[in-house]
Image 1 (cartoon, rainbow, N blue to C red):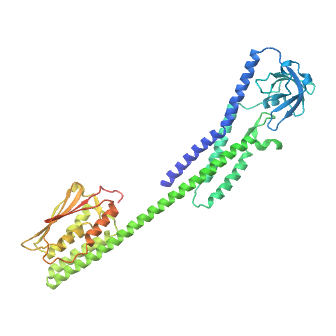
Image 2: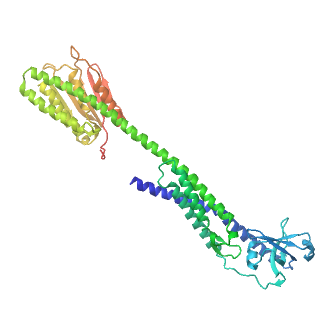
Amino acid sequence: MNVLKHKRSNLAINILIAIVIALTVNFSYLLSMIVAERETTDQRQRMEMDMAPRPEAEGILHLSHDGYGYIIVNPDTINIESVAQIDSIYVANRKVRWYNLHDGDTILCTVFPPRGLANPSLDEVRMQNGNEIAAPVIYDRPNRNQDTMVQMIYYFLLSWLLLTVMTFRIAKKGKYLHRCAIVLLITIACYFLAPSVSWMTGKAMMIFQHQSRDMINLMAILKCTVALVVAVLYGRIYQLLYLQQQVLLENEHLRTENIQSRYNMLVGQINPHFFFNSLNSLSMLVRDKNDNKALEYIDQLSYTFRYILQNGQNIKTTLKDEMEFAKAYGELFKVRYADKLFFDIDIDPKYNDWTLPVLSLQPLIGNAVKHNTITKKQPFHISIRTEDSRLVVSNRKAPKLEPEPSTGIGLKNLRSRWQLITGSDIEIIETETEFIVRLPLQRPDHNM
């Protein structure tokens, strides 16, 4: 599911970037159309404002590779003094197409007077190579809106294709150069398929359909280059982000494994501790030749060990399951301390499904029994209750006259496990008369 979401997100981003590239590379194309329209409008306005006869001039036409040209004027043919100093006339590429002009033609034409320092421009062609021209040739040039739409769609598809190749299943750093080579070849191939309007015929066609001398279209080369450069740069950025994400995922995986290893180590410390204490208690019953209590103790011990084996690898458990284990574990001590040890349990049922680290109560009960005096005159009570989403374990302090040696493993392991699993800490309160431990419960985890 995550892979599918990633693919959809990557597709959406590639589409958005492709749209931006298509708009960017065609901006100059759109701008040139606007300028051309304004020039045509200005020329029409000038014609309407000035109905006087246009100056005539004659000269030789020289065409550039891009389709426009200049007429080198014979000064003796200019019939109006205001343009006597003009030695060349600008010919727009559309006028070349309309009149089907060729390089080297002798042209007799009317002229738009110059504006400022600019060259005058061609108005109408009267004669071409000594032959009169009745009307300009009309070509089937595509509509400007249609031409613009074709350009937009083509460069959008080209950009999207290049971006897709650069971002498809990136895994290794070395493959980046291979992808760059692939998109370079794709760009070169797509250049010859790019739509272009022939300045000779005014027809829209692919570049490979042009004559061999006209296959070098600088504007198409620029557009394809921009799309290629953006795709290559974005592919590099995408790869770096992907590798960074992989490093983060790997670090998170290692962190999880480290937590699990530390947790297993701590659980391993609990089991021997509990095992040795249980054997000591059992050996005491055997020495006292109390066979019935010994058998009962073995049954309860078997249950508690089975619980530890079945749940020792689990990280968390429900409060209900932990309390069932605590009751069985407490029975082990009741067998030994008959009518001397009591458990006061008050658990709100609404917290039964709340969670806590497994085997949390075992060290608290064990330590309470181990370090306090339990006699008929001084019966010992261990309270286990819930208070404000916390499990509280408390007991009065009745220190033994000869304290048993303590390593502190129980509470230390409990606190370490709690911090590793829940990220929170337990609260330990010890006064002169009471020992209290508060364990914050967690809301039910349905994925547990």
